[in-house]
Image 1 (spheres, one colour):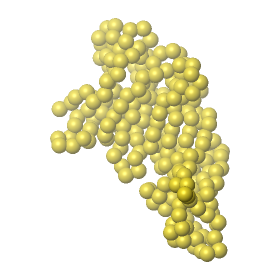
Image 2 (image 1 turned 90 degrees about the vertical axis):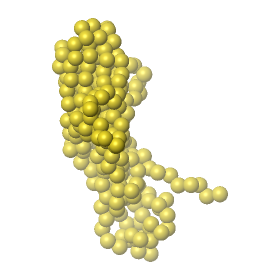
Image 3 (image 1 turned 120 degrees about the vertical axis):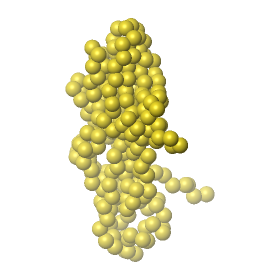
Length: 232
């Protein structure tokens, strides 16, 4: 049975009348798993209904955020779904709604495909992380991973016992943030940096995505690293 699983209210049509924006889905009996997740807008002025199935439309705990991403002072729609995978990845899409039509302005699947990264362990307890777009390089100190971890992969002289490559995961978080406090939201994208296996977390790749007028582009990129407990 189809039901509403997330609801928000706001003017997404630009007529200054609040609209109803919601996600509907079919829930698997006895499970939190949702299928056929569909984005719907009910026009507040005319009560007309418009809907579109999401490209990846199955998962858990879907949510909606309404905010202006493009700078035209009309709210856009961000929909995020947990995939339920072990890496904590998500599906994420943003839409503008104009003249009864949905226009996709952000596609998490395309973002994942576009992102090109390399994660390579180096001698002397370092990991090099490189990004192609934007063209950046980061070097992580992994001595905080502990002696047992270090001894598994490094010889006593600090050289690698064998080559090791990690990876940067697909999107694990996408958060609207108004960094400039001007009413226009950027998208803060998180991805896990993994070492030898998914749970071997080395840090997070963070991209601040800003609307250029045609698409979202990474205006700033950071790597956040995990700290260790300070010795007493």
